[in-house]
Amino acid sequence: MYKYLLTPKSLSAVRSSSLGLLRFRSKFAGSKLWNCSFPARTLIQTLCLHTETEENRHISQSPSRTDRAMKYVLVTGGVVSGLGKGVTASSIGVVLKACGLRVTSIKIDPYLNTDAGTMSPFEHGEVFVLDDGGEVDLDLGNYERFLDVTLTRDNNITTGKIFQSVIEKERRGDYLGKTVQVVPHITDAIKNWIESVAVIPVDGQEGPADVCVIELGGTVGDIESMPFIEALRQLSFSVGHDNFCLVHVSLIPVLGVVGEQKTKPTQHSVRELRALGLTAHLLACRSAQPLLENTKEKLSQFCHVPAANILNIHDVPNIWHVPLLLRNQNAHHAVLKQLNLLSIATPPDLQDWTKMAETFDNLTNSVRIAMVGKYVGLTDSYLSVVKALLHACIACSLKPSIDWIAASDLEDDSAKLTPEAHAAAWETLRNAACVLVPGGFGDRGVRGMILAAKYARENNIPYLGICLGMQISVIEFARSVLGIERANSEEFDAQTSDRVVIFMPEGSTTHMGSTMRLGSRKTLLQTPDCITAKLYGNPQYVDERHRHRYEVNPQVIGALEEKGLKFVGKDETGNRMEILELPSHPFYVGVQFHPEFKSRPRRPSPLFLGFILAATGKLEAYLNIHQNGV
Image (cartoon, rainbow, N blue to C red):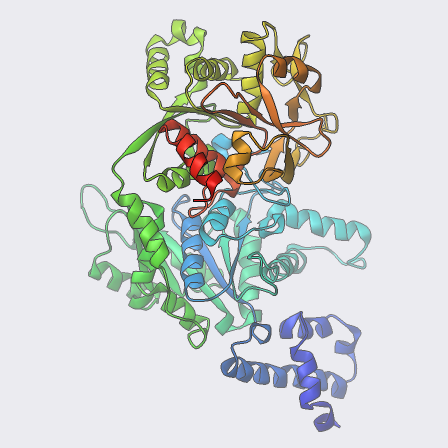
């Protein structure tokens, strides 16, 4: 009977399941069939075991993705945070993609917040927004830029999301009266989430990727990370040795007095990792200078990692060199060998990437950009804006020279309280070739931003206002040109009688998280003759990501346009202003969306590109060539 049931046809049916072999087995393990009589259960186990053997044999014979199990690369960190796990994970993905593999990414953040939407930029850096409206960690921005993929909100896992999903199941009675515990319920939820998200295509192609790169936030030993560590330990065991590779990122410090590269912090970190049930297959050592050979030998001896698998990510001129560092150290070979993918992978093709990194290193001319914002104390608060400027500048064969200006230093009060900072801020602004006011929330520094927008408008300096920056330009124009002295936003003065910026009617006044207008949305262009339409090469619409809860008051549009400020982009209802331009100005553009989120190294945001071209006096020539299709 067993021989009849274990026919090639039945085995093929098991293999072709979209859930894969492991889910087939787990499905039976959680069903009544698993608790049935011994012969029937033995049949199921034999079927799974036989199918595993057939599956492994089939993988070695055929490169078809549908017959391969998902491969996981886990990137953890030790010693201290902020070592660059995100860049390392992204770079590993770049190298694997260069080997002909399809790659997806997951970021695990152990904090209790459901998402990054309500977190302060000073504490956590920027909030990156995805197409589906997910407010996520800035590392997902690195993944999208490096791998040129479009991720979903589920690619960012937080403790808050996991706990919320488990509690919702408990409230529904899904656990059938069982005591809900961290193990197995929380850890199972984490594993199921990872396995489900890993198969979602993010590169525009059909079917799941070949490799899922998972970054675990924080450092090994953090109490917040423990459920995730345990879940990942279980995952590594369940998927099998050939489907799991762990890369541990650690610090190799050099003490000033001794001048010797110290391996002890990494030894302790790896030991802690092993104590938790995970073994590092590769070490990615962060250091200021390249690792010495004796340092590698010591790490190999005490961390039980082959010397060939000890990678050194030392300081480089720009982060685009990190994938090249990994390639030069044969990191791809070590990862592919661990994942049993050597037979289907190709040698890494990073010619375009190398050219991009070297081009940036060899640039000599620069353009000065005044960035007038609130969070200039932490540049990660505007990480995507900085990257978008970099992409645009490189396309123009320039290096970005960003002058950070705290908006509050431009205000009149600063002239009395901190006269030196005030004078320095204004001197910096006047020496800049262009002015950018990025997004933000709250009224601190608003008066300084208004002064910056006024300076750019009156002196024909290229100006780009993003989200808050657009609203600032509306307020400034209403005050200076329309003569409405008290023109303001409800965000800054809820009692103002001259509301030129209002709270969105559909917005929530009681909840902050996920209540903004979020995600990718179409903006309909009102005229094909505007700068924005020409830059995007589309006279009908643009599709960009949003994150705002305030908008321009529709009741003042007529008065503003009568004086020359044109709203050339609106939402699909026609009531929400999305893009403004000042036709009499070389480049004065404000947008309610965030074009920086979709900028890529080889495909700079059209608005940022136009902004830099205008700052160098090349915009008109570019538009003429662009329109003529030359």
